[in-house]
Length: 132
Image 1 (cartoon, one colour):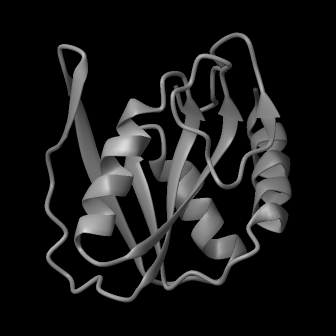
Image 2 (image 1 turned 30 degrees about the vertical axis):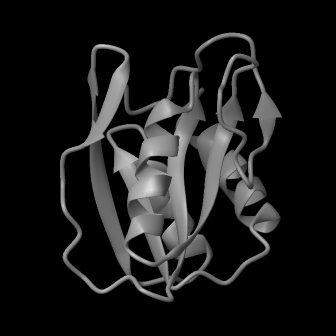
């Protein structure tokens, strides 16, 4: 995937997001660039990132968002879901802080354990993004 195609795909994804979020959160590392672009496309100025690390088969949120998220609408962004475990853990973390969380990604693999609220395509192989 090149930058032009990525940009077009992000525009397509932004059209599917039918909520008006207060905050965009990107999951490091893959979700950072998509989250930044989505924040521009949706005109959302407030943005955070969450680091989720794999520890064996488990995932753990490694960063803390200290802002008050209670009552906020958040769009949580990842580039693609292979298992979806990082997205699931991040969503649970944000919901635990009182936020309403919607999830968005460009691509989902069939084996993903999590279904995002907003996505473009199901794919059978890992997509290589231009920043990789």
